[in-house]
Length: 128
Image 1 (tube, rainbow, N blue to C red):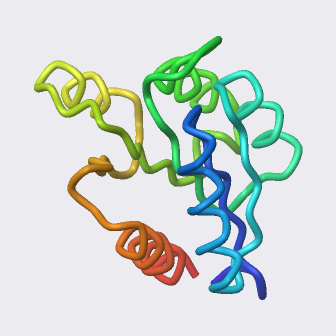
Image 2 (cartoon, one colour):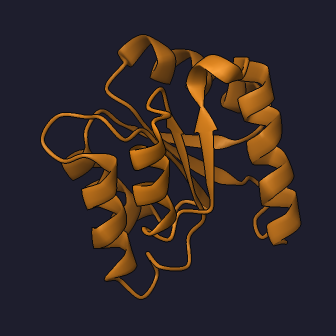
């Protein structure tokens, strides 16, 4: 991995999900940053430069697609891997997500939380 302690930004408006994921990542030795909406996500991302971002699509203030467009307009932002972690699995949503530059698309209801953590850790290991 690029850092001794890898970093992840978890962005979701479901506070309980953010809390549980943050605890699981912390237990794995990952430094966690969190945001509850898109505007907050961009502020944290541009300040902390996490190694990877887990991003929900449907959020207040700014959705995940808008966050991706803002990241893609930034020199650092277009290089950070972003995994959409969402419950929205319609064909239209997936098609739109593919055009944003996201790295992967995971459906919350299809994965256990430990699988999400393992998936992110594997992705971080491949980046090093």
